[in-house]
Length: 171
Image (cartoon, rainbow, N blue to C red):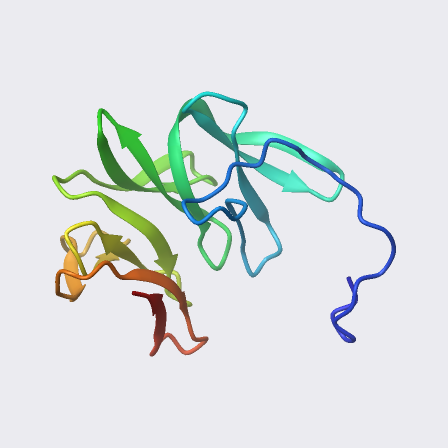
């Protein structure tokens, strides 16, 4: 792809199959500013795995334990992964630092949280609450999940502008 001219160069080449689809039917992947690409593979059944994808094809597993993963989102610097994992009928929000192989944060609650979106600085994540509205999680552990926008309408965060002052969301 030519970024300067915003056009495709050459022919398309499939590099990986079995990419899982999101709730909206689109491929479930994310790309960090650093160029790292992550995708959720769906080899069949209700469980999936999360793997790195490079130009040369599939790489090593990031989260290779089959589980009910969804919404994988890389932090802007590419060092952390926010995702949702199904656990006995609950959807838990998790943040994993792959460079240290440690789970940084896990929010287990009675309301399912989905669609994590990183702030441009990578210090917080906005999520959709199944109870309505959106919530806010500071990744540094500085506090509990807080209400960003209240209400009963389903609101799904999509992306922040580069300054981090505006959030586009679907309602």
